[in-house]
Length: 261
Image (cartoon, rainbow, N blue to C red):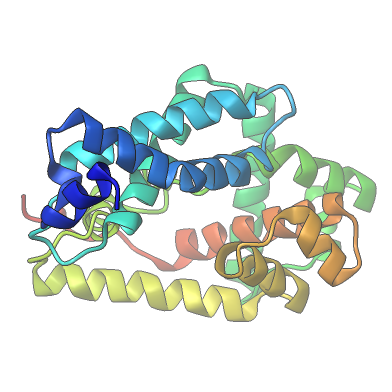
């Protein structure tokens, strides 16, 4: 047994240690997680974005997680680290403002149209209905979806369907904070319920893409092999699913009172 391993076993919560040697060991231990999250985000970004840059940001997020993790709370370090790593990467991407304004505008048009049709039809709109509403053909619609894929990265801070209170609630839960008041718990349960309803209402292939991507940890290429479609088509299905879920939240989740500090 190495000296470093002996130190790890002696510490009840080695993640809060100030020992730089132990911190280095933690970074090495969780390096594969950083790379995995960076690759997942990179798969939905333009090729001009360097994977190594995302990994570097992820490492910064991991170091932040090591410093701020509180073992007295009822949560796992891995879950907290994932949240911090992903957040650090997305923060850097937002700072770079790598998505052109025209692309953001197209994504907003798609979101608003999905939300409008969802409200009118009582279900997610299909491609033909979207084309009719947007007054475009199927090729033009798919081109809009392809361009909007880089905006479909879900992030708490960018979720304009949530009130400030909902954002704070989601951050608290993502960080594993305990002691949320009963009203907060009801708010979160409502959000969960609406998302579940939205997923159930999606077409089968879109549901399957979400399941394989987020729960089975397959990449877009692997999902394409499972569904026997191209990687580009998988990306389209993923983007459409996310836009529809955001539209459902926009329609069905009203504002709540801000959570108590």
